[in-house]
Length: 266
Image (cartoon, rainbow, N blue to C red; front, side, top):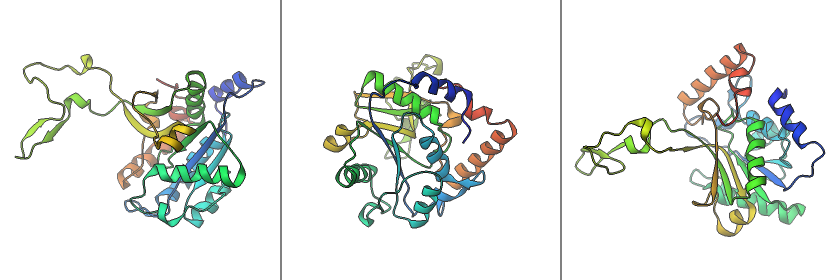
């Protein structure tokens, strides 16, 4: 993947400097998918969906190793062809529809420690369903963590609807506000406090927090890396995939500018 000018400038800032911490990138890609069959390797812009995330990770200047945790041989083969390592196959008990993420990542970290004697300061979880996060996003997030050393950092974007304006149905089937408030007070969106929604692109967690406390982003000690909406699309449904393909066409027409050269943290 061709480096953008912003990424090359970022690299120049780190050339000749000793890295402050070791980061293991873990891309989780189970074989089964209900909404979109074969979702992790479905075509997006002429390459498998997972390839977008692998390329962002392996082109990072601050990630030490990129591995894929999968139970699927085809995903493993494709992942290796795009530059990721697949040092093990994920156990069946961690590959079910209802398997939570944390035990999957803990298994990957434990396997690296026990079988390759590799130990890391922070673990970076990357989900292949968020294809437009760039390697510059990853490096900027790691840079923040290197300087501040929080328990964790997660990427986020502005929500479509502010939580204070969201409604729900009560047990009687009538509307009420999700967050109770005085209805006589008009709430202008511009005056509401900032709210953020995690976009699933980057989860960066201190290894001991993940392994000993079983947490990815503990409340009160997790920082936010703000990303624009155009790089925050999470593909979960056929409609999401349709939108992603439109975005890719837009990238091709504009030489990559809308996503790859969009200003970080805008």
